[in-house]
Amino acid sequence: MPTAFVCGATLKRRCDIIAQMFVDARRAFENGHIEPSTFHSVAELSALNLHSLFETFLEELFLSCLMGESGIEVERYVAPTNLAHAVTVVLRASNKDSEYLTWLPYDKTAERAA
Image 1 (cartoon, rainbow, N blue to C red):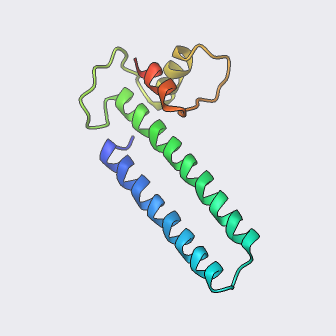
Image 2: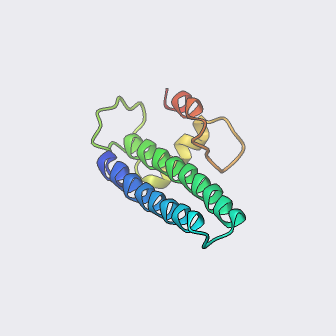
């Protein structure tokens, strides 16, 4: 399980890649190398990718805190034995019938943590 530092560094690295791709697309658009619709698609996909990356960051950070491996001092009321057990604990605590956890909007994640 990654530490909080690793989660943050991974998020930054991936965001930097997306930012550079967006800058490249903007430059290509401004120089007439790509159509407006292509540039808009790149912008939309960049935003969706950033959203997905942030959600993955929250998931990894949350689970690493739950496992006691984040490097952040948190008060844990449960001590899962492994990652699969941690996911089961979170799913059970979410009171949902779904097997899919969502991490955004963040206020729901904060409620789950409490």
